[in-house]
Image (cartoon, rainbow over all chains, first blue to last red):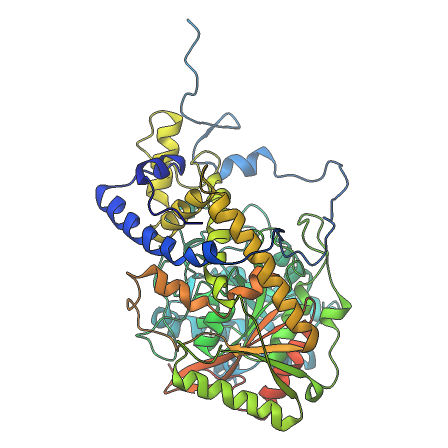
Length: 98
Length: 485
């Protein structure tokens, strides 16, 4: 198997919701290609079919499905970038109905 | 007496507090004076609310006076890395993205420290969102190595290690995703423990790579490190991977002189500075002379650890950091247009270069057409690495290597070469990939710069690691060391 030799930095930036300058695109493209070439060892390795998340205890410790304490609206809106009338404000998502 | 309090261990401070020869207020006033004299030189703290510290100290002294002391940490300051939530204190992750965020809640470890009577003492600098090995990626300030102010303290918990080595605080909390507790501990000549994955709750730790992240204790001695560990480990239903306190991990281990120590083949060769190799070899010979059985072990997939880590960690980071969209908290761009434009502008303005680099890398390794080649293969490599470590640890009690291949480098020396920085973590990464406990212990100097060795054990073998560290520490002069500033 051969690993990808390159990537489309514009597409990646769009997926990652990042806006990059021309200088950033050049820099990150060069650095990511260098880093990805180091990952070639993964492509060349003889690997098991299984995957593993390194948990010590296999069973997830699920808590009971009951309501518990939560942050109140005041605490939530206090840390929001913008709020109004106890709610978080965001740019308009849908147009007014005509 | 007050001027020397910053040199004392947490255990000794605890004894004096318990004996009534010291109050928490006097201790905190002495540490605040030390902070005022030294913090600008080393840059370890990004925030210290002095009046809040003194109020906590007075409350602790009042509890003690009323016979309601809460244990060995009562009245002892513990400084906290700025990615661990403490209610009412900043939670910036040393990022512009969270520059104005004040945490509305306590992390589980903050709750534990309050319950233990500890003083929650200030916020420590770090690489932005814990991404880095030098603390140069902080958007707030630079942190320097107290042993040489032209050099990095390591990272990402650079503030946590620098504060200890500078005598700013007796105990600190770090977080460790690929070595972020142990590598700065080694560079600053202090003790740092990454616990078994799941021993300490991650509730309230700002997520970087959730399958790798662990909070851990840092101190100037093994005894202090153990004191803090015991206060932190506790069951918490808010972190489904946290299994709570374990007698196996926390009960003091038996005779350290009977430990079987494995030396991974080739780990002291290529890329390890001669002075580091010499200090670590001297530690090996010390253990041999004490009666420990030393043997060489094979870890054939060790070379896969760094690429595996940087695929898994960046994949998880790109997902975890998706939450910073300028909507609910964190930076929102003033140039907002549509919601997507607002999110994109907010993220582009709020994140620094290393965070952007890792988000892009993680986005790539998870993207359609590439996920099987990168992410899935990395998960398979992770399974192989873990299985090799567990197999090696079936035959020995601990594995011993250097913590870092070279001593602390100069500020700016590797800033333009991310791959070289990633290789700083070559010895520490496998413990995160395999969920194993690991400890860095100061073992010497390269010139004036501290060097540490690294012990890795089977799951829940913290007590064994600490016992091995204690045996070495008791025979050498590296405990409680502080740089002259």
